[in-house]
Length: 311
Image 1 (cartoon, helix red, strand yellow):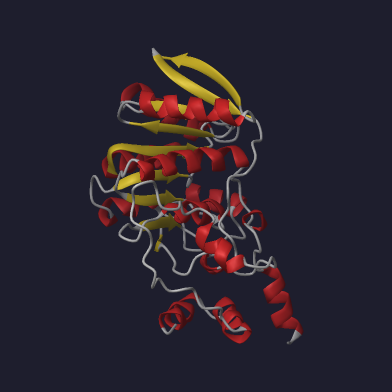
Image 2 (image 1 turned 180 degrees about the horizontal axis):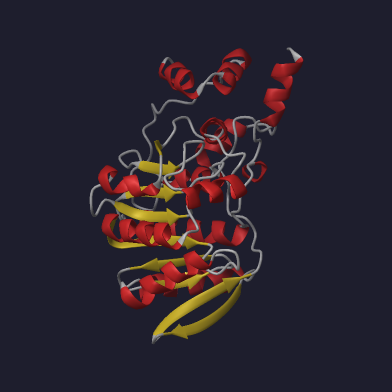
């Protein structure tokens, strides 16, 4: 193996925490709780992430995607920004972000890419139909006008009972996000479910059933700080602490034995009581040869997708 190939393989993420980004364990727990609840209740709908950076939260979210659902990820990546203010923000905060880096990270954990929309999140107004998504994560621009538009898009595409997650709603360097978030709460009918250190979780429906389940889970875990606030007559849960990470999707580059089996089962629930067992003839994932694995890793994304279809 050449030194270049060896370095390339060493750089591939072997676990989720190897992917750079801001997605602490507290939010991983809340994502898993909310997405897992939707699956348990049979709530249907697509997943949407506005702003992906290098893919850490998208990789995690995708483990809850069902076969008949769509996962859309929208980001500028290395495309030109739509205005000078957005361009300045991208140069300052996301200078190292490229679509190739995102796709390589994502494909280390999942066999297929999500539907990637490379451009400003404003284009989603024409890309997505109303009432199609059950979970929307907003983590793109920090500029008020853009965030307000992203929240409007989230409200339009969410199904009844759907959840929106707004990142950086309280950071000192993102006052535009705070302004758009609380405007949505007081003027657009957004009802907060809970707050974490950096994200607000909300719905345009009744948050109480979700809140009760989150409270019960937090109490049973014992590793989360809990407080109950009231904002504008609405109950809001506030969670803190550094809880233990929920199960992570496993990378195909992990060194541990049995990593492929872990990758299949890490976040996928087993059969529930009374549900039919998996068919006995279900296929076992084939182990890739080393050469094929390196080719998938190093080829451009378009060629990578073509190679995957030949499996």
